[in-house]
Length: 274
Image 1 (cartoon, one colour):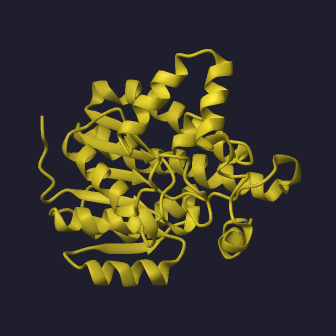
Image 2 (tube, rainbow, N blue to C red):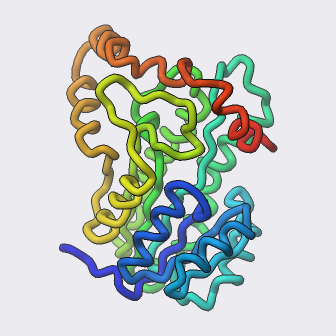
C-alpha cells in the first residue's frame, strides 16, 4: 500500500552532502519535514535554510550515543520522528594490510556503529507510537565484496545483516526496515572510483528517488540501479569460478584498485581522520 509523505518527520544523517542532501531536497518537496544531522553543523544549517519548508539541522556525530541524544533534543521542535534515514558513511579504500588501525576503527564506527546508535536513539519512539520506518543506506559491496575495500565491505555487509535482523524484530511492532544498496554513486565519497563495465554510475538524486519510493511503498531491499540486483542474484547461483570470471570480465573486482588516487586525495584525508 502506498503511503503519503506529507507531514512526516524524517531524520537524515550525513544530510549536508551527497545522497543525504539530495534525499532531504526530494523529501521536503514531497511534503516532509526533514531534519538534517551532520558533523559539519554550519553546512547542514546552510542546506536546511536553502531547503526551507521547516527543515531543521543540528550537529551530529553518529558514532556517539551522547551526540545522538543532543541532536534529538536540539531538533525536537520538528515533532516525533516518523522515519530515519541512516545515510552517513565514509569510504577510505586501499590495501587492508596498509590500512592504519585508526582508519579501520573510523570506518566501522561511522558505517556500522552510527547505524546502530541511530536506531537505538530513534526507534523506541516509533515502537511506542506503533509506526515508523528505518531506511539504511548500505552499498552494493555489502553483497559483493571488492578488493581494496575489505573493511568498507565488511561494514556494509554488517549493515545488510543488521537490517535483516532488525526487520524481523520490529515488524510485529509496526516499524518497517529497508536497506538501499547503490552501486558507484557520483558523490565525493566515490570520487575517482570507476564503475564496472556496463554499469552506469548513478547520481545522488537517483538514490534519493529510490529512498523516497521506499518510504512511500516499503520494501526490504532495493538496489540502485534496480536491475543490478538481478545480475547479482543470477551470478550468485553460479559456481564460484564462474562468478569470479564474470566479475573479472566486468571489471567489478578491480573498481577500488583502479581508483584514481590523485582525485581521491582530498576526500581520503578528510574521511580517514580518527
